[in-house]
Length: 238
Ligand code: ADP
Ligand code: UDP
Image (spheres, rainbow, N blue to C red):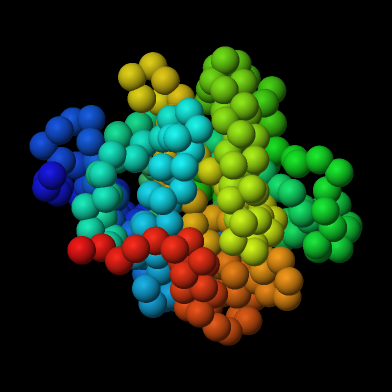
């Protein structure tokens, strides 16, 4: 599988076409951004960690019957994926209060929610990814009702799988963001699952092991990413 031309350069990844129109190659960068791209930096080694972690977790989802875009890991930073039409909804699941939820709802961070929540942001850079609900999404024809039902079902299933898995690694899954796309008439999970897109706290020390260390200038950002990667127990590539 070879890259043909760059289709898109995002904040964290470059996306390339291949000779197969149904296949893209994503190439993960060490670039980090926060606060709608206002804060920029580098997290050394992040690209490889996020690539390999996403693939590891997507394989767990596939085993449990959740379809993903994963095809094949090509190198530390590159993966062949099914080319989807991204549904422009960022799907956020929360188990413990943090970030924008804590701020908006006027609660402290770190409170275990009575049940997991789901919310959508409209994936639109010009509008700065505003909050959107199912009715707006349907009214704007961003997705069909059936697609939204599938997205919600998969999102909660993914949460249960990840919660259990991270728990076994001594990590609390606080919240995360996922994206879905359309592929040959099906809704499948796309994009990534990594410390960039999840809040991960050590169960014992409550230490943050995710991008909040970068967002909040807490230091030891690389150490946190490396620690998550270490706990995943992913073997070195040959
Ligand atoms: P951003 O666009 O937010 O800066 P990235 O740097 O992660 O984000 O860029 C990757 C882009 O590729 C995102 O817009 C994401 O929605 C898109 N994408 C992820 N997986 C796929 C896929 N399988 N097919 C098509 N596009 C994808
Ligand atoms: N998130 C993300 N990309 C975004 C917005 C949020 O990956 O564009 C993730 C974020 O890392 C966190 C969860 O979604 O794990 C919830 O984020 P929140 O709404 O609290 O926003 P933030 O505090 O990051 O602004």
